[in-house]
Image 1 (tube, rainbow, N blue to C red):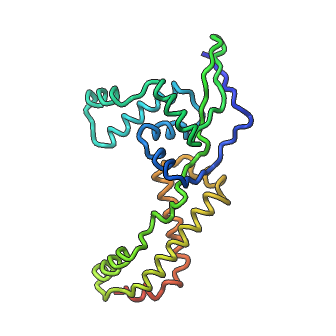
Image 2 (cartoon, rainbow, N blue to C red):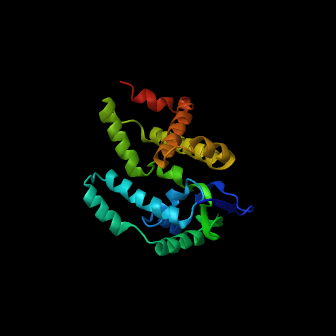
Length: 229
C-alpha cells in the first residue's frame, strides 16, 4: 500500500535531553514504557509499528533471560504484549512527561486512511547526575578501596587523602566528558554513536572518561607510586 508521511515542520528532535525529575526517572525505567522508547529510537512510527516492536522487544528480553523454549516464549509474549489501546495510553503518558511527541500523520493514499505518527523528543535521554553514579566517593567506599588496593598490590594501604584526590579527579573527568558530549558536542555525539546500543554508548562514555583521567596522571602520581609493587 502506498503511503505518505507528513511531519510537522515545527518539530525538531533534540540530540540529548538530561533528565532531572525523579518521576521521569521512574518512567524511563518502567517496563511498560521502555519498549516504546526503544522502538521510537529508530525514528517516527505509528502505534501499529510500535505494537510490532513491542512484541519483538519482549521476545528479545526473554531470550536474554535464558528462556529458549519457543512454546513458553509464545505464551509469555501473549501475556505481556499490549493492545493498541494500552499503547495509546502509555504513549500519552510519555507525551505528558515530555519523552514523546505527536509529530505528524501517515496517509494511505489508496484508502484515504490516516494514522498518527509519534517520535521521541530526543535521540538520547540521560540522567543529569549520570557521571556521579559512575563513582563511589563516600567514606565507606574509600575505606574499602584502600584495603583492596593493599591486597591487590601487596602493599601498605594507600593514604586515604590520595584516594580522595584521585576520586575527585575521576569525578571531574566524567563530568567534563559528559558535559561536553551532552551539551556543546551533542549533535556530533549523537551522529557518532547512533548505531550503538545504550550499553555500548555508556561504555564509550566511560572509556572516554578514563582516557581523560589518564591524561591527567601527573596529578595522582603519588598514589600510583604508593601502590607500585
